[in-house]
Length: 223
Image (tube, rainbow, N blue to C red; front, side, top):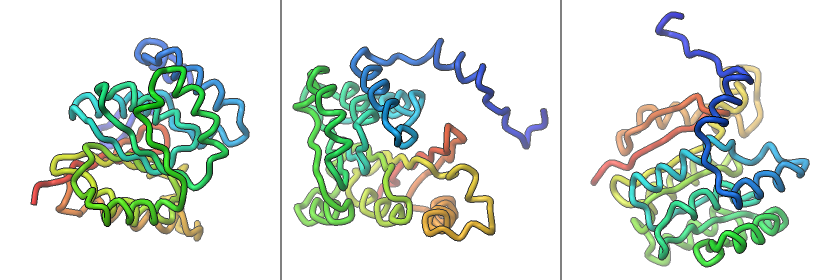
């Protein structure tokens, strides 16, 4: 295979990756299985993404994590388990319906005290955090919510994370739609513009990974 190609991850290869490398706790696995029973189960991050988020938290010695888009809190629980005892994940979602699926699993894992779940439009909650003086207070931010507002979420996260803090954005390939010139959906257009922006944004170091539906990892540059 030429160097200008990436090897495809086949179903057997994905099964192998998950079998030999995924270290889900029993509580994280139980929440994944509960989420899998929902019609909207595809909204959850993949296990290998959750584990990468937990690894990023450990590598950065994160104490405060910001999450935009909770869903059932599967990724939330991965990250909470990776934090020190006094660490916190502040997670935002527009509705409680799906968050309530995750809460019993957070509590069963002993992570309920680490997770600060806030309800409301993410742009409003993020603006309030900035107004409260929380700029630079977070070590890691994970964004997986309304795609058409991703740029606003990214800009807020860039303010809220510290220098050398990490911002991770999910679904950046959008099922391949970012390559479709005929896809005129607002979400697709927003992601196309943001992908181009992140690639040349000197405020960050960036790596776009073909992991599941595309994961972009940014590190905030000092200054």
